[in-house]
Image (tube, rainbow, N blue to C red):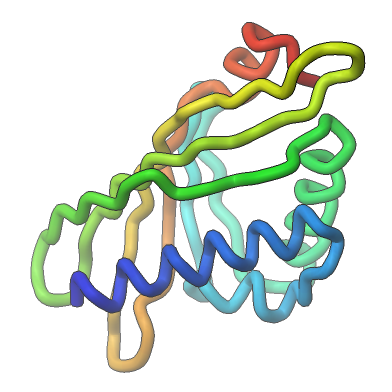
Length: 143
């Protein structure tokens, strides 16, 4: 399962890059997610379904990333903590690069912890836990 989860995040990274370039197929982007998911951050806990609303929210999110100058999102490392033969946490270390007007580009390292499930076919993301993205961006003068 570990090799398949690593491959999932390689694909996720590629889809993120395509989305930053404005060249993403939202059906393809949402294909990495399970039918339902949970997300937790300092803003609270959210639950959702993998439906047309998710596609719309994802599209808006990528537009926002482009608007604030996000030019790259790269994975530095993936560490996998299995629970059983079906579930794991993928601890993903990301590096993002942002263009700022009149200033040098800035890179920011951050981690997101993804809940992954594999039932039959390909593994799917069914949740994630992240830090306060807006605060980190503010501290680096992005946005």
